[in-house]
Length: 360
Image 1: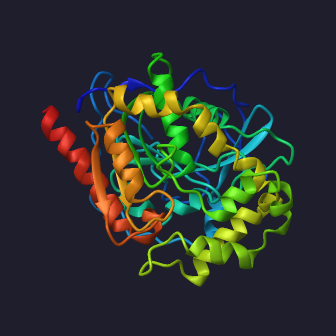
Image 2 (image 1 turned 90 degrees about the vertical axis):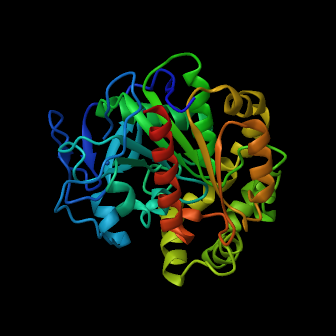
């Protein structure tokens, strides 16, 4: 299956044509210009062939560091079904011939999770990252019925708006379920084509995923109360525990992550967002089943020290997707892209190169 591609997504929700910067000023529709030099990436490749990651042209600066303030200023917005969504792309999205990599973040954080892996990924791909509804800098409606299917549709709307018809996917945690839904839609032959899908730690296999106590509380009848009691101190303790003992998050990262979670009162809707755990159980046949039947090449890069989706998830994934590639990171926890971004980007690159060598 290494050279196969599948159609990705269902009919996307109609997106408002006018794209805007986060400060409210409009971006010209005819060009959708970049806001500032922004190291995030497009799609590409001929139809019928797997798009190959390519190196940036000689002389392009690949060493990139950005603080959260700069990240905020580089955010763009798209309105879909009346909801304002924040998204990013790399600075050379329109000016180079490289495949598109769609980055899908997890719960309860945001696309900021990708900032440490961004430079290496941007050297080979045109990048797109979306803060899903209820997360990060996107709108966070208080009484919304959040769903994985809707989040998948938002990603499809963004890809359609950008004219991307072929895409690689790198997903994490909650984003794994979004990617599974997109893969399931691919069986219907709809929308953009998937060249590959790579998962990081997440609840891919219900029963092989072990939610933390705070997640169980949020998902239960006391969820609304628990959301109201969430604060930065509790978040820091809970969040740190899913990292590896040698790769704990820095004080700065903890502060940045909480800032984006609590933006717009987002921590108060955690009990609504956590409904994805029940959705995973309800959609098990569709989402787990597609792992074993999709023609799209699959990979799992998993931090084994993750108490939520570590070695048990790896075992379940191997059973569900015996043809998939698996990379185990023995010293890493739930957030491989933050704990050891080089290991993630190297493993992702090596896997795709192996697919290319087998199909050539």
